[in-house]
Length: 283
Image (tube, rainbow, N blue to C red; front, side, top):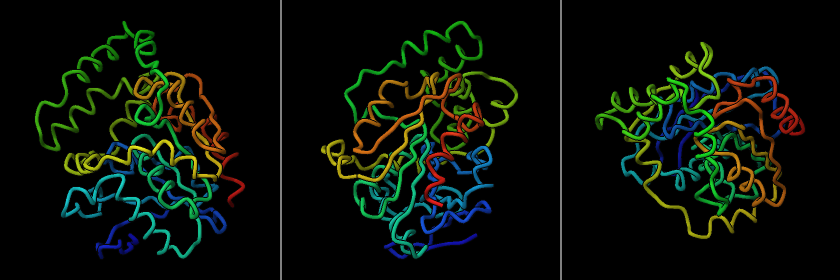
């Protein structure tokens, strides 16, 4: 597995996936969780057949060591790690793809290093920390109530993990998993089993608050941005996600029907169509 040296000298790992070339702009894919092993991303509905993807193991996740100081594992400060990765790859600009919590890091990198961002693809991003748009999550939850497994997931979500160790966190994630998908078929059940969370890394991820003017600084990101929302995403809602796209000077948004938090799993054809249209020009 390839590695690169971060600014503090720590060797961090990344995966290289796919047969595409992605031209002079490598596509760097950031997993969410927070602090979930990137294995749950799979091949992103076959995206690796068309594009070469670089998937970092964030600090404390997978084969990358945990930070000695928690703040170095925060999404705001891990932007410096992405900059080290860009330098390691020997390119002037990168395309950054983020899913869920990974979009926090993608945005943090984009506002700190806008000159090195060729494009941003933000998949089901949390957005209420950046926009004032009222959340429509409650309405989406109400539309699903009455489904036994969904209702049980909401109870677990409200209760939180039973303990403070990794096993407790991962057990809880399995209990709440049905709330993350628009349907809970065999495909979704299998996907929910992939990719383990690391509790310490998740806590470190949120250990540093971003600047208060972060939403305003998004205006400095002039690269093209595509935001993908799931029409039935009970984790992020839809309205705040669409409002996030409007913060970017060149932002656009696509809403995928019958889709929750994992578009490449739930609506692979629609996901690929939108992702390929955005990514193909960078090849």
